[in-house]
Length: 375
Image (cartoon, rainbow, N blue to C red; front, side, top):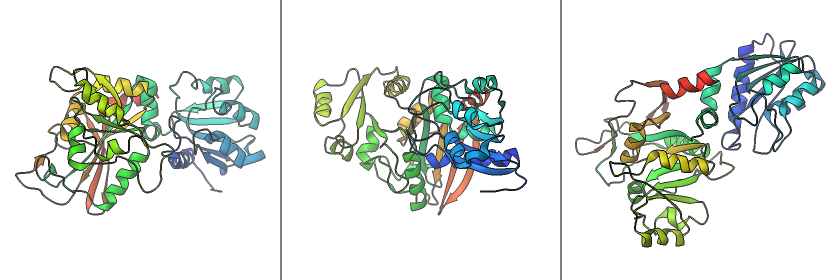
């Protein structure tokens, strides 16, 4: 690919677009894209396409061949310096004769971070900070885990035009159109875990698996908050637990016979304490998910679970799907503390139509300010 008069922002924008092609295929690694530019032309580009495959920098250098020497590499994340599933990218960059590296954000991990210092020590010019906000948004789960040692939490809810999530409590209600559902499945494909409450399972009987394309490398962990261990053994989640893992969080006082029944059905069970309000401790849930290697969590309901995580300040991103239908005065209202009700502390990042629906993405300002500051 050759582009005349290429600016640094153009090159980084291309690298960010390339990086997104690894969605659902690279976790726990980050999404990374790289572009090699020489004489204002892209001479090589690449992205990290699958866990264990070549990193973006190496893919771009391979594509560039001998033309990489004396060129500039634009990459969305600080090049790694460690020996893992693949050799250090810093060594490949130095060996290829790259003159300058421009990267967006630092790698926060202890094992891989520090690559910029190694490059400088080898005489490579290094610049950081181009298109930081865009790079942080792309890799928010990876960066958040590196900064806080906790999973990045996103919430997804479908709302009617008058702010309801169901026609009545306990009634399964279709609000979103097929275009919105396609986006939900894409979101599922890019996370490590999908979380719901037991009541959502009772009403909707979901599988909580990504369907359509792109399919993820690994099916996300399916998580249910079930304080009293009352999950129906005949529901779709339990019946498929031996095929794709299901983790149920119960309270420490849940009846042992119910817990044992879930375990015999193939469900993994972990007990956490209740809060003073009588609900499961959200912080304890996230801590255990982190221990299990979960970097990103998508909460899909219901209202009680959403309210709990929002109130605790644990939701960093909100995916809001608003359908055109109004459900009326008897409908079940969505959580009162959603960003759409009060935008204080939240940033509206994007709005676009999905068929007849409106899809909005909100980000919690405090969380992303921390990420950008650390980048």
